[in-house]
Amino acid sequence: MARLQVSSGLRYASPVLIFLLLGFLAPLVTVVAYSFASPKSFEVFTSFTLANFSAVFDTTNSVWTSFVWSLGLAAVCTVLLAIIAYPIAYGLNHAFGRYASLVSVLFVFPLFVSENVRLYGWVQFFIKNGVVDGVLNSLGWGPAPEVLYSPGITLFGMVYTYLPFMLFPMTLGLSMVPQDLVDAAADLGGGRLMVWREIELPLAMPGILIGMLLTSVLAVGAVAEAKILGGQSVITVVHDIEIAFTYAQDWPLGAALAVLLVLIIGGLTLAVLSRLDLDRVLGRR
Image (cartoon, rainbow, N blue to C red):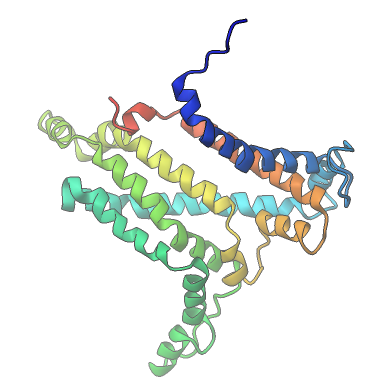
């Protein structure tokens, strides 16, 4: 009787594979199964219906608007961060050269403080009789305009929170642009805009795309910013998922929302990764 041959690599990797199967695949399968269960029931693996997905896209149900808000805010946040982070990353690379990526890690330090603590700090900054209001009153310029608990301040909180996740990959991408190549293009008569468009931007694009992908994925799942700064003036899809699994006790609906969100984020991730040369990004060639 032939014995099953198992490579040593597979044997060594089996603990990690088992951990991933139990910690990632099993919960995901359970969530998918719940999404096809009867509405407002716990009949997982015993029923099959598309009613939960139909409820999400029902025009008389407002739950689909949370997808619009989440995807819209994530898209605007990603674009704003790309515009903000690019000149910072460019300046870091020109000021610190090969140490720019290390210096950009300094922007990660705020992540060591709880996000909720940092967001409540902004609440104290903008709230009535807070820092801004107090400064303007002391200068005789009257009370500050109310900015809290609005979609705009929610977007501000997302930009503030996710800046490090855009900046670090973008700095890494710009550091991959050989300065000799840029100098040679300039010596051959290339204008500054043409050199940037034809050389710097294409070579830095892997890092830029990774930063935009990472930021957009995190921003779609943003919920603390909408709760703390926005005062729930914007209801995000993650908040609807939380409500479905807790107060509403409608696990099938929450699972359907989660499955749709995973499909959207997964499709976005695959679309971006298909345009990346990961070997080049990882420095393998």
